[in-house]
Image 1 (cartoon, rainbow, N blue to C red):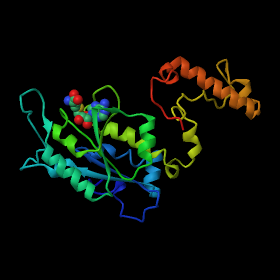
Image 2 (cartoon, rainbow, N blue to C red):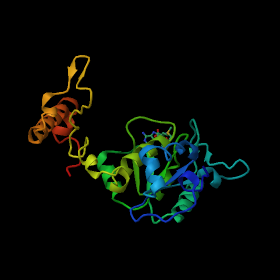
Image 3 (cartoon, protein in one colour):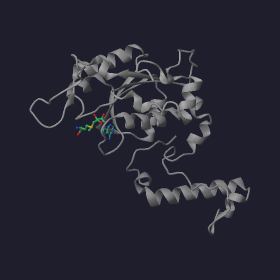
Image 4 (cartoon, rainbow, N blue to C red):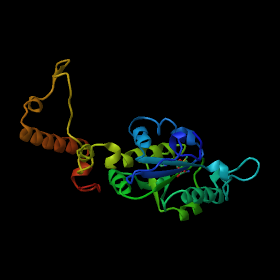
Length: 250
Ligand SMILES: C[S@@+](CC[C@H](N)C(=O)[O-])C[C@H]1O[C@@H](n2cnc3c(N)ncnc32)[C@H](O)[C@@H]1O
């Protein structure tokens, strides 16, 4: 995959109006190879509903070694991503997009939730900035619109966080998921966890599918699912029930 090309390196094609355009600044675009070629994301890219652009940070590096990092002022371990090379990469990628919303990936950001996926899925172009090493020179934060974290843990780089967020966002676009209804039924879409699901066989090692789900009575099935969803949410995620946590309500 060429770092400057669209996903899959195909020649540019006419984009459907619904195309979600995503840009990624990274030192490791190759990490995204199978991500943009496989399953839902791969299908969305092939159909033109999703366009993924990469900017190789290294190409903006300085000197013969194309350096993008340096030692921290004040001392301390590790290396910090420079503001000048990072800004150059962000600006170069932005110029290939339509006023993208710039999102810095960082464990110090706001924790990414389904509500953020929903919010970002309704926006225009999105540009994700993946860090490495000890993270970014603080001044990079002045060049972005928001800072998002995948959760309260530290990874080596922002690429896995970018993939997780891109998948959660893209699948909320009706043209990408194909069946908008299935996203509405899922966990968090109505502030609760999804009800238990079953498929064939009816009996597995003595455990049966609940009779009601095979009754054909859709009124009763809906009621059962609502109740099961409430019970499951109360057991596993009481924070979603008592309003401590902000969730989507639509
Ligand atoms: C080793 S981390 C740097 C952590 C930083 N020194 C700190 O303590 O906040 C390197 C990069 O990985 C990415 N990263 C690590 N954990 C992340 C998380 N939970 N969410 C989003 N990005 C993360 C960020 O882009 C970060 O700049």
